[in-house]
Image (cartoon, rainbow, N blue to C red; front, side, top):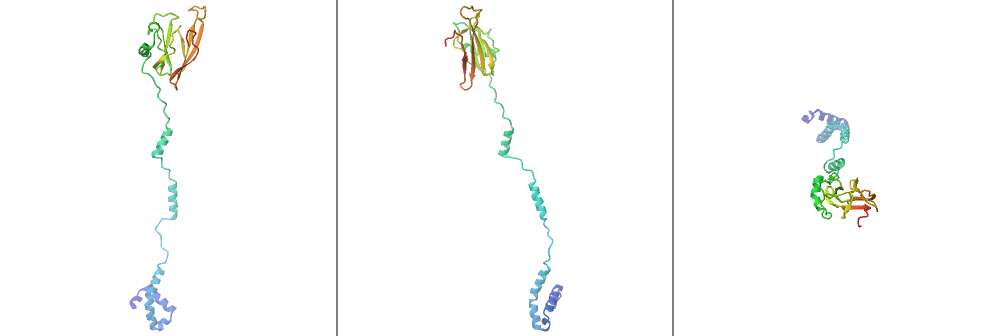
Length: 235
């Protein structure tokens, strides 16, 4: 008992117990009982002395809020994977399709395909007087006018047609006299003015005119004729 009372806290608890219950000092039996319950009381005193609030070592709640604000204030990540690819494709302009062109020059096209053009009464076509400047290796429709060798003003002519520089045929399977005047209207259209003599007119004074238009049709992939033929043509 003396050893237990050496502890200051235990002595204080015992004195408090005796003040509350003075009868314990006069009754040995009660003293003994008090000693038996003293450990329980001491435990209570110890718990009471340690119930004071302790300092916390964690971060304040405001830091969590700041952390949340910091997280919410971060920049959104850049798009990646499929999303980034689609965005890049939308930003990149679609290139224009490559235009089709032949690798042949006008003179090469003439020498290559002129033998396929039927002749008039076995008169040979003249390569020397054929104007190849009207040939266009990239145009949807271009042409070369073929004269015959040793011809005159009223001699027959033929018009070779080309699509992207490749030979596709002639304007008519019939021979037409007098030199035709051909002009381009657009990339796929040419206009041909045929000359012919009216009744009683000489070859030199021929005043008749017929205008035909030839157009490359991309759908049918063929040349479409419109307009007039000269009266010498059997339609």
